[in-house]
Structures are given as structure tokens and as C-alpha cells.
Image (cartoon, rainbow, N blue to C red; front, side, top):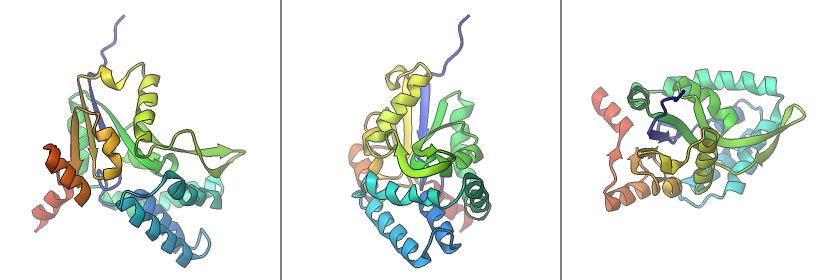
Amino acid sequence: MSTLTPDRLALFDLDHTLLPLDSDYHWADFLARSGRIGDPEAALRRNDELMDRYNAGILTAAETYDFMLGLLTHGSLEELQAWHAEYMDAIVHPAIETVALELVEKHQSQGDLCAIVTATNEFVTRPIADAFNISHLVATTPEFADGRYTGRVWGTPSYQAGKIKRVQDWLATLGKRLEDFDETWFYSDSINDLPLMQIVSHPVATNPSPALRDIAIENDWPILDLFLQLQDSKS
């Protein structure tokens, strides 16, 4: 008995691509302002420093995950889940725009295999992927042992070139390779995602940073300004 498998793959970065914000940055900001992760001023300052380095394309995986995964050590799993539910209600759900949902739904309605591929960790992003009705999530995996998060990465971070390995590893669990698809899309805003964008058949610079916009123009890649279109429609 044969089963029908998709021959098109659509991959979506999350932060500033499907969301008009950075879910990792705002999760840290949310926890810091609520006083749940120690000195709020120190945490906010470190969060801003890391975002500046990320935007410049010079942030290392070790720098970001030492801080971001360290946040998960400040509570039990039950506490973290309760905090995250508050975060979703206060920050994420109000930020999900119809234009982003429609982009995902366009690919899903065509029968494409869809996944979010993000550097942000699975704890933060699994409920966000669910909100977009995307079951497949390729995200950095936080180590979990003895009922708590350890603050360390498990396996390869889903960051920069690591996204290629993580996507290939995920596809292997489905009995597929990237090369098996007739067409492949990757939507991203960030120059940090160049490694994966350069190996898909349809890279789409989505709400791109200035650096990625320049590269997209140079390579004649399509540019999709989702949230600029939204702002124009409201003006």
C-alpha cells in the first residue's frame, strides 16, 4: 500500500518572520520585568546586549544559549509552563497577524510539508508553533534531566549552519532528505539564516534586516514585507 507524500517543503523562521517580534528576547524581557530571574536591570541589560550582537550577525551559539537556556533553570516545569501561558496571552497571541497565518495556510492548502525552523528553544516555541497550526518544529533543544531544565543545549543548536543539520535530521525521521523535494522554500528575516537560505530552491527574504535585504537584492531573491503590507493597509 503506497502513501502520498508531499514533494514540496516550506520552512519558516519564526522571529521577525512569522512574528513581528523576537520570541526569545520578549520571553527574557517578560521574565526579567516580572522579577522571576534575579536582578531585573542586569537581565534586561544582558538581553539587549545579546540582541545587538544577534542583529549584527556576530552572536555565538554559546553566548545566546548560556543566557537564554539559563532562564529555564529559574523554575520548576510547572512554574515555567504557568509563566509561559501568561507570556503567550500577554505578548505572543496579540502579535500573531492574519497575514502570517495566511502565508502558512497557503502552503498547507497546497499540501506542502511545513515546519518552523528557529534558533529559539523548543520550550518557548512549541506553543507558538501550535498557535500557527504547524505541527513540525525544528528548534534548539534544551537539556532536561531529573525533572528540570539544566541550562544546557542538547545536541546541535538550531542556529546558523546548525539549522541545516537539524533540518536534515528531522527529515531523516520522516524517511526524507532535503534533496528529495522538487521545490523547497525558506522564509527568513535574518542574515544568520544564510546557510539554509542558500541551499533551498526558493529563499524568501521576509521582513528582512538591512543586511539580508541587500543580499536578497544582489541575488534577485524575492522580498516579502509581510508587516509593512499590514501597516500600509491600516494607514
